[in-house]
Image (cartoon, rainbow, N blue to C red; front, side, top):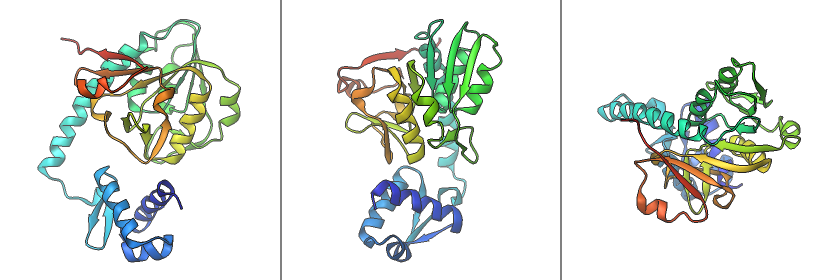
Length: 258
């Protein structure tokens, strides 16, 4: 069993039983305890669980702390960065185009910036983005079919494969949990990554919307390889040293409004 599939199963077991034990997992997944400890260590670093003696529990089981309050403030800051990046991305969209939007919160900010545009065709697996753009009768909105992920506004799975294979988009706007030069854009969900691969395959250009906190981070599954990305839009907080490592990709920095 490959590591991404194994870690998906660990998360599912955590959701079902509220805890996992390394010895039980080793027997159930037919891998060594050492391999599982490495899995749990990486998953904890990615904020997916909290390790305990001999196992792990869901991260939501953690008690509120001062650090949690600091994280909340950082989320609010990131929301502002996403808005700036979304508005910058809107400058790349022109009347008459067909664009693909993923279901990320950053791309949702792009959708909000496009709501007054004329004569666009938008294909998305983001329910909230679709509802936002559907308020404008001059925008043709196509919602990709699939399974609505619990607790979110995104449609997952490859049930929309037929629709995507018949669409030729000008641009695909996408974000991810992380981006590294070596592994490209990465997400935790294999299903989400596979859907993004289908969307990327049918776009003339791929635009990655990545605030600086995502740069240099990675998750389990690659959705878009680095070599496939045409443009990256980030913010002023991006590490210049990291950006210098990116070659052959247009880099746009969205500036915060003063």
